Image (cartoon, rainbow, N blue to C red):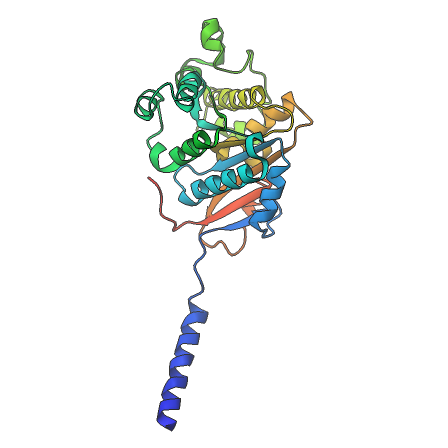
Length: 291
C-alpha cells in the first residue's frame, strides 16, 4: 500500500513539474499602446464606437487573419449594416467587379478570374469577402491600381498628371500633398536615423497608396457607420500612413488602429512595439505562415 501511494505521489510530482516547466502555449496576446495587456472585449467595444478601424496585418500571419474575421463578425453582430468593409488588397478599378459579384450579376468563378486577387486570397481574404456578401455588407476596394503606383515608383509622382480623367477616378484627387518628413516616409526615402536604400519615388508610391485608401474610405463612410479597413501594418503603424491622410481630410474622425507584430516571447510587449497602434496583436515568431 505504501509503495503504491509513494508511486502515485511521485507520478503526481512529475506531472506537476512537467506542467510548471511547460506552460500553456498561447497563439497571441493583445496589448494597448503602452504595452499593457488588454482583453479582446475592450478592443471590440472601442472599435464599435469608432468611425474608422485600421487593422494592420502581416500579410502571411494566420492569427491576424483569424482576428480580422472574428472582429468583423462580432462588429456585425453589434452594429449590423452600419458596418462597412474595405481592404488594401483590392484595387479601386475592381469595384464594379466586386459589386457585380455581390449582387449576383457575375459568378464567383468570374469574380476570381477578373479581380486581380492576391495569391493568398483563398486562405486569407476570401472568408472576409464571402461573409460580407452573405451578410449584405458593402465591401470597398480602396487601393490605387498597382500599375499607377508602379508608374510613380518608376517615373515619379508628377507622371500621374498625364493620366486620363477616367484613370484619375481610381485614385485620390491630385496633387498629392503630404509631410515627407514623417518617419515612415522618411525611412522609405533612405533617410532617418537608420539610413536605408530607399528613394523619393518609393516614398511617393507609398504615399499615393495611403492617400487613395484614405480617400475611398471617406468616400464610402456615412454618418453613424464604422468602416473596418484591412491593410498591411506599415500603412497604419505609428498613426501615420492612411491615418495621417484621414486626419488631414477629417480632423474630428474617431480612428482606432490595430497593428500585428511577431515576437520570440509574447509574455510582454517589446519596447520597440509600444506605441505602434491603439492595440497591438503580438504573435509568436514560431507561428506557421499562410505562405
